[in-house]
Length: 426
Image 1 (cartoon, one colour):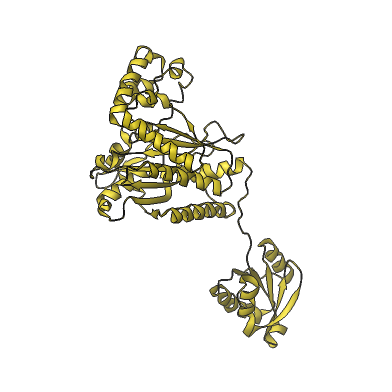
Image 2: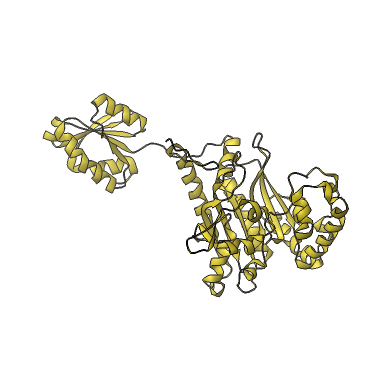
């Protein structure tokens, strides 16, 4: 029987994994500069966490979660997103008592959603996200947005757009909710079944419907911005002011809502405008969630964050034709001639690797010409040639594969010499 990979998943082969490593390294370095610390949570959690933390009216909970019953009869779910698990850990480990507030965290790892696979969207995908928990300052909203924008810019993306909105506080959302219900109720039968359910459960999410986006009532739906109270309006103005001070361009879209129930006040998305990227342009989404910590059992604590898919980030880079500056090849390849030389090559390679030099040797008992071809395929900068004659004289020949220059080096000095030419160390 020939086994195949499950639908909606992918193998990241060595030819591609270097791109992932580069992007992840840039993300980690940015978090270091912004003083966000890594948190690692389990890949599965109790299902109730996502019912309460993500919202039982969301598509994620209703349609997309991988949920199963374990041997102890407990309902377990593979994490569909990162924020709920991070907040659960924040509460469980009493991080709200940390003297350094807000608590600034980032995560990077696989998430799971049962949705229709398409370009850049998988059932198992890797998500990078940050959470700043413990501050009501609009400046931290701007900081979180700036971090996301910095990641895309540092990787060379230019055709991106930041869109922001305010969802307001509880009283603002309540007033807007009532207006939305009144607006859609008389003709809700013209909408999809999901929207008909959303009308009473979460009417704001009707605005996020992909099936009915062109319906005429969508274009005339009440704007949340018209229902913001004075406090919510002032908060949103301050966030916009900070973004302007940071030189980060943005558009305000009153129809922007997030697909998770825990958002309030600031909501934002970063989109790709690259030609040919696809119909779904969102690269990153986030916002403020002031009630989530309390919902998961902690004290009333504000929070703000974002999440993005590494797969979609790489797709955006491909759409803009951006090649990452990834260093290919190895430092050197050891060519061994004769049985004694093959034996001596083993400790030689080991010694060079211990000095931080990337080295490879032949393990297929190939002829000299084939070994040189292998060195070329691996893009070796240098080839170290060791044969019977060289061993008799305790030397090795080192060939620069770019210039063709070849020098003889004493075996006792070989490691020092290679560190010098490969690493610039003397």
